[in-house]
Length: 163
Ligand SMILES: Cc1cc2nc3c(=O)[nH]c(=O)nc-3n(C[C@H](O)[C@H](O)[C@H](O)COP(=O)(O)O)c2cc1C
Image (cartoon, rainbow, N blue to C red; front, side):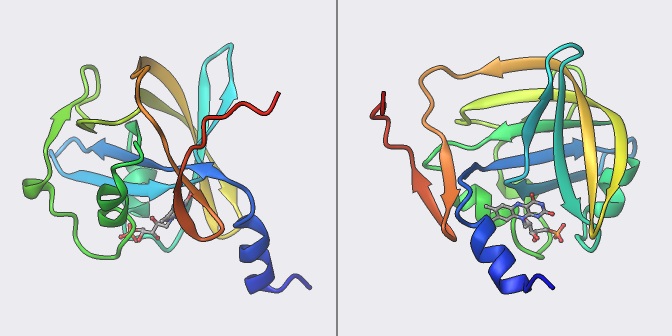
């Protein structure tokens, strides 16, 4: 039997980037959530993957979503990460965001990279749902420094190469 605390602590040793995934629904409503599970899945076709707790308030919204955007957070965006990692309603009117070109999903200024995706498939993943997106549009910011999460804390990248 795997103890939940030990599982979390062990997974906390796996460093991740931090992304806010957003979507705009047909009725204009917006959803967004902070995730560390975002990863590249396939190059041909270009697919990305992330997972969302089935109990998250925004789960129902993302299960219905046809598109989403990925905001790859910069090291100075911990506040934004926290806004989208609470159970509170999202203060969209106080946040500066622009609609992504093809999908209208909210993009925040100052991120390291952006992606627009069409929802390709959704899979069951235990207590999470796994979302696979097909990349429609990419926008890297070459000078951006990413926000990292490791050992239960936000970190910045030490850019020294080891080899
Ligand atoms: C660094 C970080 C990474 C996270 N990664 C995920 C993730 O990959 N999947 C997930 O479901 N929740 C993740 N969370 C937790 C959600 O952001 C959090 O549960 C959020 O409150 C969900 O919002 P909602 O229930 O209001 O929709 C992460 C939180 C942080 C701070």
